[in-house]
Image (tube, rainbow, N blue to C red; front, side, top):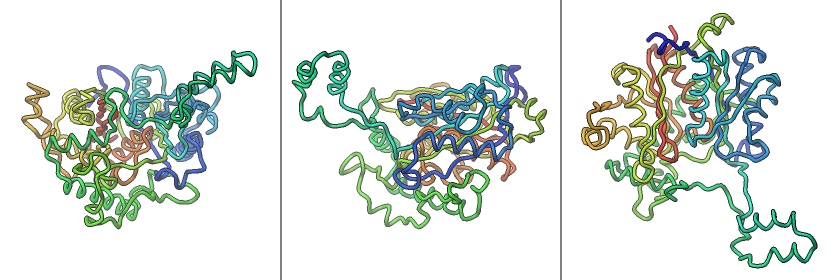
Length: 426
């Protein structure tokens, strides 16, 4: 593949992540700023790029702390990047880092920037918890009220429930549903059994544990306090233990459980992107070309998590490739049922006839190419960071396995999907 529509070639120099950890454990004393800063510092150290060479920094984050409304800028300064380096933060649910990377690609393709750092961060160990709206309204009014009697009068009419704090919502704003309900519905629609979901989750945990034991992730993870261990991975998980768990969302007959769903995770990841010309001029050997990419949207009521099917179909057509051309496949694993439903949809004549009429189906994804070192179910899923992990993992797999093209796909809340093509640098 040559330059895309005459635009500049964009390359991935490298990427890295902090060890992803279950919320409330290893990083419970840290805030998102700390994780983002450590990831950026780790990338600068690993690649050896001069901070002064970086034109722009973009970070994805979903649940933002008010004090760090632009965490990309704050973390950049904390990591030692120059004050002259511009930065902004993006949010697009579980594909926030994907959006940061693709925005970086666009800036480089069009000549706005030569060197971009793009990644993301999330912490569930420290989420903003606020007062209810009735309390907030009265507190804001108190700033203008004169006299204690008027201030106290503003408290009249409050109900006991108004005193309860509000944590960030995990349900979709439009549908009112949590994603687990959507995954349950999707699994039922595509005939994905509870046993299939448990088996896939078991595969993810075992493969991630094997990858860690074999040192596969040593080139991806920046040690934290001397350790690269990711404690959410359950290498000792068994089918019997998986089967013993009760449904987490649709009770009592649902199929999604705590074991076959991704868990709340803290973590940060970052990638270094450059124009090919700039990379070679600075003496870097790129890992991969960042080629075609797309973002799609589908029905959030019935197809909330089917974005990977629509996005993969679109990006392969866009790139002039078929599944046979793809050597490495990495999908974000939000839920085992969601992943398996998408794999079935990609190979379903009925689905394409009903939803993508006239478009050839992608076909059956060979499992020997798919998420071979585990995925979000086992490694974890910090919402804002997973996209950067996927890009780094695919580039490294292409190098190790000698493949040419890699396909990444991910779903996100709101019925959004992302897919992109990565090509190993020759």
